[in-house]
Each structure stands twice: as C-alpha cells, then as structure tokens.
Image (cartoon, rainbow, N blue to C red):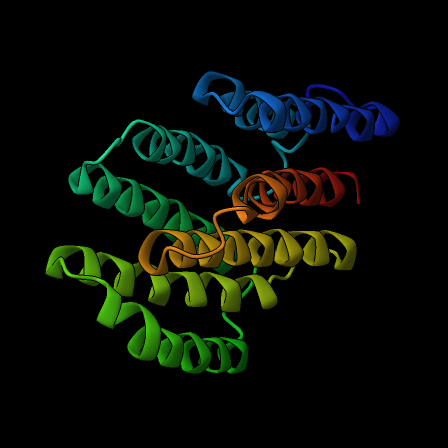
Length: 217
C-alpha cells in the first residue's frame, strides 16, 4: 500500500530532486550531489512501493552515490576510479534485474548498441587505456550498460512509465559515454558541467518519475 495516495503530490515531489540537481550543478560537491539521489529514494519509497522490485532501484541509487564518491575523491588514484566503475556497473546490474522482473530484454536493441559501442571501444578507448584492469572494467561496464539499455527497451510497465524509464537509462548511458571520452581520450572537458552531469541527474530523476507513473497507473 502506498504511503500517500494523492497523485498530484507524487508528481510535485519530483520538484525536490530537480531543485537539488540545480544546486549541485552550481556547487559540484559530493554532499550536494547526494541530494538528488536521496530525494529520489524518498519519492520511490513513498509513492512507488507497489511497483514490483522498486526496492532494487533504491539500492541502485545508493550504490550510485558510493560510485560517485569514489570518482569525486579519487584525485590521481586509478584504483578508486576502478572501484567507481565497479559500483556504477553494479547499479546497472540492478537496473537490469528490475527490468527483467517487470519485462524482458529487447535483444535487437542490445545487439545494435553492443555492436556500435564495441567498435568505439576497440578503435578508440582500448588503445588509450594503459591499465589492463581498467580496460577490463571498462569493457565489462560497456557490456552491462548495453544490456541494461536493452532491458529498459523491453520494460513491461505502462507506456508512459516504460518510456520515462528507457529515456532515463539512455541518459545514463549517454552520460557514461561522455565520462569515457573525458577520462580516456582527454577530450570534452567542458562537457562535464553542461552536459555530462545534467544528463546523469536527469537519468535518476526520469527513473524516479517512471516509478511514480507506474504506481499511479
């Protein structure tokens, strides 16, 4: 049973993570960035308890905060960067599990994405990554990202919820792609504030909006 049943309140609640994202984009500190995920977690718990597997998304957001901490405080440590990749990879696995509970993998989308990203990885990223563990972590992340996107495309929730969720995962994959370009190819540094982080925050907000929509409909 949902804790609060007023539909308009559940949609208005989404203003909170949007507001937190706006503040985080101005400050950039990890504590401020956590506000987006924390408010999303509260909204999912308050309004999306009836959606099967919604707790999995809560876990994914918590793990994402840990991954973000590793990237924000890694300084020059490749080890922390690898840990960050592993944590975000775990979050993608949880998104995949949620989608499989509520649908199935769209294998056509997965194959197309894997082919495209596989070529980019082999031609551009792999030659630029000197560390073998880091290269392996990046390859695993790429595979799971494509798989979670394929699963999002096959989500069986209501159409508005399914679209919101799929766009949210697509935004996350796009943001991850920009991180790879910045970290491994040392390009697009200016994109961090104006595109990469906004799409990252948007992904979590859209996923939360999808759960709100699914719970209402």
